[in-house]
Length: 411
Image (cartoon, rainbow, N blue to C red):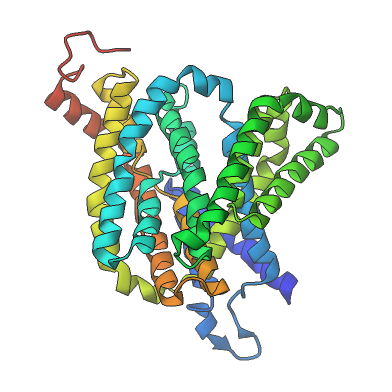
């Protein structure tokens, strides 16, 4: 029956993807929704004559496939960012990214006011802070913005967020698995940070080794060696208490400096998309939609608070790159989208509940909040980007084409 369950899952994902494409929306909310529909909390409560249960259980394959989805998503994100190119624009990226950190502070305050404790507030701060690299990049391509000036501050700020969240995930994992005891988790945090520094050294100095690894004319071997490198690194990271997403991101950055980066992207893109779909499906599968009623007020409050903060910090980030008002407004609208990383953070709480180091009820609440929040923000963000024209016109009419600067607007 496991093979049938997997077949049903992929069939449902194919239908959901086609529906999202027809409606011009991101596939992420649709994958999550179909996972919830086929999970134990919805169709799992339905039993038909002869057929029996019509839901898809959380099999070992689906759970592992979801983990691989995270690995490949972050591996590809790393492939997009060459360390030398980032260093060349480090000043602008640093300013825009530091401004963007205000969203983490807003999330920390929001989480503390709601839960009254540091650890859940820390998780909520990460969930509302991090924008979706996957959804934003896809939207940039679909809208034709990828070659425009606004793409650089968007991608640059995303890099800053990803580097920050790499350390954050290591700390959050250590704290949650350590039961929230900062002292007890200090050793694990030290190991995690040390591992991240080692990965940075690999990215900085390991390009020749990665070049030799994929130095073959056989495309099959290029694919297998690349997969081996990223999955093994992710496995070591998990064993050391570091998020597999962090390791995958840095391995991707290491491969980005090789001569075969475009071939790797072409070969592994279908693999990434298939397992990423499984990840989002799994998120829905383990989420009880009945909990949305309990967190609806928190979701609404988070949307009301963090949408304006992202708009303001995104706009200022665009200005840090010396863009005019219209293009800075596009940056602001793009940064509102949340997605995969917010869900990855929520899975830390779920993992902690499974291992007995985090309160299960609190983990379920945080997971339901993250899923609901991502569903709203992914749809809102892609809609704002697709319908940016009136917002751009309003910003120009209010602030002027150059935002009040005496210098002529750039580009």
